Image 1 (cartoon, one colour):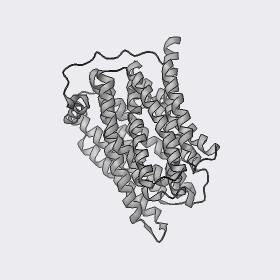
Image 2: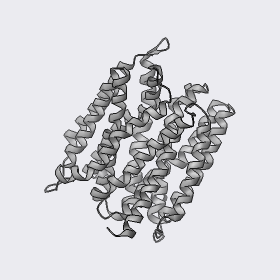
Image 3: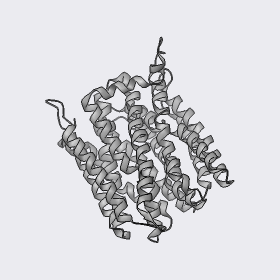
Image 4: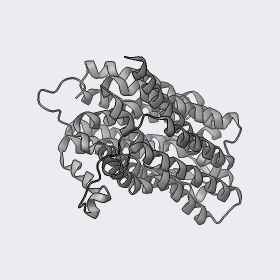
Length: 400
């Protein structure tokens, strides 16, 4: 690889790193911040705000990046909007606005942040020669950025403070500034005579008519049903077991994610995609079974397995789309993936896990084994669905 090519890869890796720092610095401590400020009642809805946003903005901005504007410029605008709305959200929590007004502000912030990762994935994939081999090592910087965001929040001792909103603002301003140094991407030729259906990106839904694509989208969404319970409730369980600086402990989730990212290329050369993804779902079942033992060691082990499960299902599905969807549709395909995982999966997961948590809690005490075993069962159901419905293309090679 030439020095220029390596430098370009380094720039995209740095972009994913900074974005992940900003995302982790907000989402990981959010649940405890709401609890400490007397906003526990709106916690399921606050996390569901990102899922609601994923139904709306990713497809719109994905269509914009495919048809109207340079993806880099779209990303820059979204980063600036995210920075502004995070500052507003931090102010709202700190000044104890009405809970439902705070929820409305969180929803506005979520609308700005929801498309960012799918747009960034489109930018990175467009520059890769072989996504199977190259995306993992680049994307791992996002994993390390997530760890850095968790450690930053605990290092600043703001795990339960509304100051996380202002911290996030500073980071996302940095993301916006960083996009000015990325290699330019030409804006696509402006499409004409578009229907509103196409302008809103809804034509991407036609991808669901292709059986292989549909199974991949639905499986990822089903896994996200369980993942949606992870960040709202794992810190609460940690705190009950006596842990402090819970954001830092949650960073253990990324330990196996780093290993899985670096292993993706080798795995895809040797094994069919179907069995790799099933392995990821298997790790998903184990992580919740281990958490259900409800001791410090087993809960931390369960948290650690999150990364392997996430990578071998969610990241692998993104690579699948990059390899199997036509170039002109790739931004919309990644946007539809965000809608199915962060939208359908997370919305049902956040609201469903809130309901399940309520059922598992009585007299102020949560029956954590029941809570985590229920999530393990839901991942097991996703594995059964994928095993019985996914059919690789005839004559496909390993990694397809």
